[in-house]
Image (cartoon, rainbow, N blue to C red):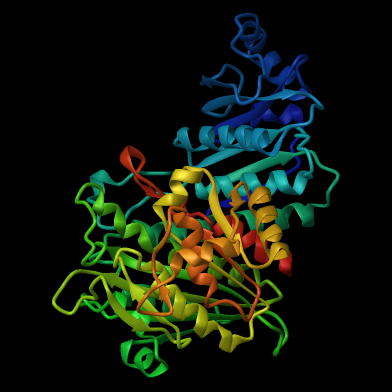
Amino acid sequence: MKKRLSINLTKKNAKELPNISSGSLIVGVYEGPFTEELKIIDEVSNSQLRKLRKLGELKGKLGQGTYLPALSGVKAQRTYLIGCGKKGKKLSRQDGIKVLSKVVSAAISSKASTTFISIPKLNISGEGDDWVIQQLAFLCENNSYTYDAKLNKKNQKKVLLKRVSLSFNSSLSTAKLNRSIKVGLAIGRGSNAAKDLANLPGNVCTPSYLAKESRSAANKYSSLKCSVLGEKEMKKLGMDCLLSVGAGSAQESKLITLNYQGGKKGDQPHVIVGKGITFDTGGISLKPGATMDEMKFDMCGAASVIGTMQVMAELKVPINIVGVVASAENMPGGKATKPGDVVKTMSGLTVEILNTDAEGRLVLADALTYVKKFNPKSVVDIATLTGACIVALGHSTSGLLSNDDRLAQKLLTAGTISNDRAWQLPIWDVYQKDLDSNFADIANIGGRAGTITAACFLSRFTKDYSWAHLDVAGTAHLGGAAKGASGRPVPLLSHYLLDQS
């Protein structure tokens, strides 16, 4: 993980704000009468704030920002006033995120290494002050992300923010607020670790590279243990389905396990499984050339598992968790799997591969069979699995399918709280027939409801435990001018696992 950003709670009173020496000063503003903080700043600045309000530049409306460089009477180099809406009014989580994002954006755009933030009480529907502080800490870390690998120094984006001082009036104990800061920063770092892996080019981030980075994470945290299976070991276990995906590649496929022991020995672990296709050409069923470069992001599920496991280790969560990464490179070649080939899975089921571009479910099938050895309490797999999910839910919401509605509800709740939302789709038996094959037990594609039938395929290998599938094809990364990994669903997974503890 990258450099550590620090956030420190402080109890500075309103009269001290003008004398705070920091690169930037950020103050939350309500609609209506000035708070004590604004009265003090207005007084030392020769009524500058009242003048702005008369001009309609300081209304305090939700998310409105006002930038005041070198404000008279204020020691901070730059002052930002961020609208928080009407005092006491209930805000949705989304409105709360809007305000906090604006605050963090101001801190980062100030290009200062230090900032002082003073925000008034935000009345978030269903959430307390600890949620506000945790989200602010997460956004500070998450939004400070820069991609530095393989960039010339002159092209590297600089984010200078290193230290945040935070004044926040709350009835909660300082210890509880500091815990919220710690959790928010840890999830932000885990999210950024996932971005780093996903943003790397396919010639760097191979299955072997994911194995190396997983071992590095285990070396960093004594509570993490890493083991890696190569192709010979997987062949002995009967993982022909997973191995079929990497058959055309010079890169060796890997099955990576990160084992976190935070609970009692013998306690059933929660398992998270990530699809790790480090580059997906589509194989013999070759993808179109346009935007194929974005297929380096087909390992975002794996990246989210590795990032989340580091969050759990950093926070010393008191449960047992196993992270599994099923990794391969999907390439055409003389040894590549062909459409119509039939392969045997570790479970014993045979699969007719009608389309080699539906490969994620093939590596997951064997991984989901493999995790039975851990006697899991729950299993969640994460995969950039289907373009159909983007058609259905766009780029803001992940798809969720499960054989256990209670598990699904826990994940949906975690997504809502973390602002990393998912939506549940059905996985009814009526869709299973779309996977019928004349030549094997099951086909790897079928029907128009691509996201659902893909999950139906996976469900054939998860009948022995509580399981959920997250399709993050639309949320784990963006394309076009905004091309890059988002770090999702590390926040959702982290909140879910924290809730289980």
